[in-house]
Length: 72
Image (cartoon, rainbow, N blue to C red; front, side, top):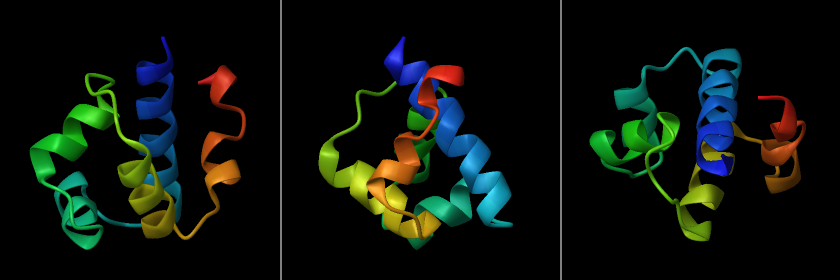
């Protein structure tokens, strides 16, 4: 399911591109920790606005965020 694949993708990117915990990354991008956690766990249907916040926090483009998502 796309929510689970997206969650795995952002978790992988967060760990590769930052040394931040979920909590610290969520704070950095202005998102509630539990909300962000539910995205990474594939339990949340995330909005486009929040997808953009995540990409900016990771310092990548939206297209990079979705690169190879089928393989997650």
